[in-house]
Structures are given as structure tokens and as C-alpha cells.
Length: 90
Image (cartoon, rainbow, N blue to C red; front, side, top):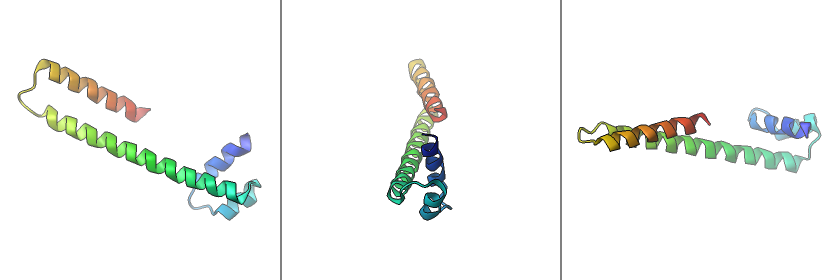
């Protein structure tokens, strides 16, 4: 299992060729290729989630700038900002 984690770490490094990872680890070329593809998909998903979180925070921030907010609105906004911040740290 230790070698699997080593391969997972290596496929994240885009400067390494699949051929070199196969040579270094002894893993099957097809398996390394699938792990590289999965790593790229994981990064795309993480980037999309981060962009969505930033967009939500911007909308909430813009809404918070309004002068006609009630106390309950302000409380809800504060809670939502805390949730977004916590989600970003997870």
C-alpha cells in the first residue's frame, strides 16, 4: 500500500512523464495513466469548488453592504460567512 501512495504523489507532479513513473515504481503504465487522469480531475474539481466558494462570498459581501439589513439578516450573513470560511479551511 505504501507504493500506491508514492505513485499517487508522483502522478500529481506534471513535470514527470508517465514512462518515468512506471520505471521508478514498477507500476503498470495503464494504471499510472489512469491515476494521472484521476489526479487532474481531482484538481479541476477542487478549483471549481474554490471558485464557487469565492463567488458565494462575493455575493454575500455585496449583499452585506446594503443599508436596509435587519438584525436577523446580519446574523444570517455572519453565519454564512463563517460557514464559507470553515469550508475553505477543510
